[in-house]
Image (cartoon, rainbow, N blue to C red; front, side, top):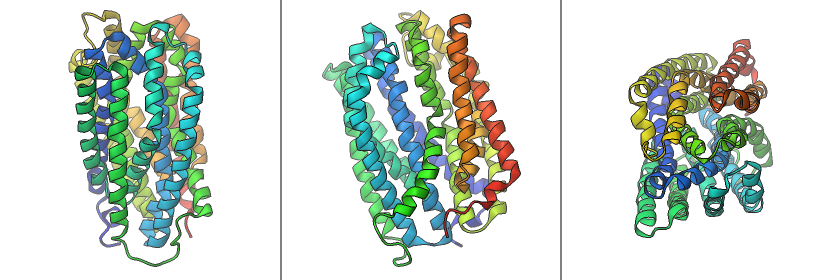
Length: 448
């Protein structure tokens, strides 16, 4: 315990230095994903950008399932680590790996079978439909690698080793960009090229991550209760936490997917601009989500060690962090929004797309503090395993986004799609924080 800063260090300092590699890693993850958009937007054309954008809202749901599932499953790992139960800690990790590998294979089959029907249901414009389908088929072939990598990253974070995923993400991101440029510019593969590059880079990173994890686990003391490779009880407990975590992580992506048909009805140019705007949003929320994930790990380890009062200090430190991040992001967007949106497209050749992306970014830039407050509060509830109200709050967030977009966009225009976003964040935070104040999360007990 003495060597674990999560349990013994100053909460604010510990959270910041633990969250920093997660933030940098998630930024590289976004850079990883954004490379496809930027490269096809610059070197292939607006239709290719719209095709990748139409696919992104769909594929990002699966990315968030992987990230949310890993975060939920890793709560048990963090609590066992905090309690010094290293045998059970190993078993919880192995159980999560087996479970999510099975889930990834099932979702791969689902993707191959359902992609055409889903893209048609989303009213994907005919001029980009074929490219979007090609991108999706290649992407889903690599889905097991995506899951493995994200689950392993969550495990490293649960162990307090957030620098390892950062190093792997930097490597993977740079490799992905190199392969993107090579396949699009040199081989002229277009949308297919960026999809192939993503699968190769992510697959290699997943294999390296697994090898490193095996080495890390050997460094912990042997013996103790729980030495098996799979435990049904841990699977059940982990699933109860993982499902709400998946919902929480997927809210943005599922919301984007469910309003995609609304956006698509405005045409491919508006879709291209909206896609660029949501990519900027994805980058801006990274420090907010990462802080929430750090608070979750901090909560789980301290509850495992029986130190409930440190959790409150960690949460308020998280609030200060997201407040500072929100101010910085708002100022950057206020002064540099044209250049930020312009990185995704040529503003002269796609004026309507540029205007749409710019309008979205300049509006949403003032509200990122709300998702930061929500993510930090949700982090405490998730880390404690108190997931009932936590999931309800996130579902309320999702419902507001979908209902307002579908009812109001036909009347107010495309702007209604993004007006709903901060409304959902605010309601989510108020519900979660009200429940946090009851203190019932302190009485949750996930481990013996």
